[in-house]
Image (cartoon, rainbow, N blue to C red; front, side, top):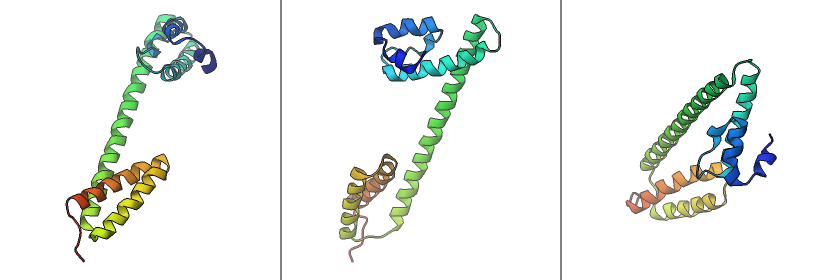
Amino acid sequence: MTKKELNDIHYGKLKEKFEELGVGGAWKAGAKKSEMINEALKQLAIVKDLKKEDISEDQIQEKLEEKVREIEVQEAEEVKVEAKKVEVAEAEVEAKYREVKFTKEELEKKIALLNHMVNNGTPQQRTHFVHKLEAHEKMLADGHYTKG
């Protein structure tokens, strides 16, 4: 079953088709069709590998559920790691900018430049610049600048 074939199936019929294919767990009520199709394709690949092991259909379903749980746990861990990285980066940026002294005018210029970068940068750059922008705006709002 290909992505295109699954995409051609009406949303309301996907659950039935997934169950027919042996990947009923890919159906999530209210989820986006594309996300469910991607999940179904991942599960179909797992089922295909398991069928090579010459085990019963019940064992295939058990092992599939086990592998899906393992993947979900792994993805949850990756999200936690990424969230921690962002949290650490935010703290580092804020600490760094708390140490640096700018005049009010310099801060306003930097904020204007960062706004431009947020609006025109790549998605990866935007995340970085948003953190810097927030730190600069906080410094300006808190009056954390020099008079000279």
